[in-house]
Image 1 (tube, helix red, strand yellow):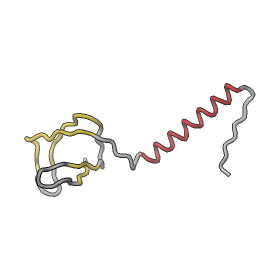
Image 2 (image 1 turned 30 degrees about the horizontal axis):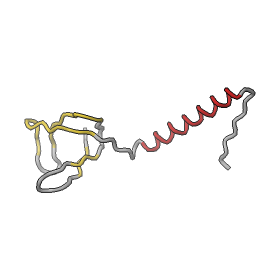
Image 3 (image 1 turned 90 degrees about the vertical axis):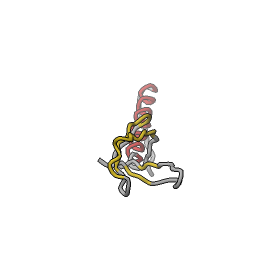
Image 4 (image 1 turned 60 degrees about the vertical axis):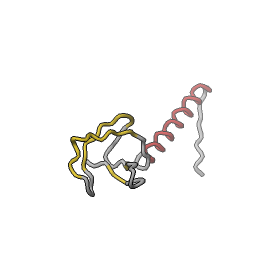
Amino acid sequence: MGVKIFKAEIIYHLFDQWTRYIEEIRAQRRADAAGQAVFPCVLEVLPDHVYRQKDPIIMGVRVKDGIIKIGTPLTVPSRDVRVYGIFVVA
C-alpha cells in the first residue's frame, strides 16, 4: 500500500530514521523536477559581442544575477515585440 513503517527501540532513533526518510523523498523530488525547473536570471547583453541578429540569435551576455544553464529558456522584452523564446546553447 506504500506505507513506510519505522521501528526503533529509542524514540530519538525513530526520529532520525524519519528525518532521513523525509530528506531522501525531498532529494528525489528535486532530482525528478530538475529537468522542468527554470531558475530566474538577469543577463546583460554585451553590445560588442552580437555575432548574429537573426534566428538563431548569437550574442555574448554577462550574468548579473541568478544561474543560467544550457537549455534554459529565456524571455527578452522588446519595444516592438513583447516576448521571444530563446534557449541557451553551448
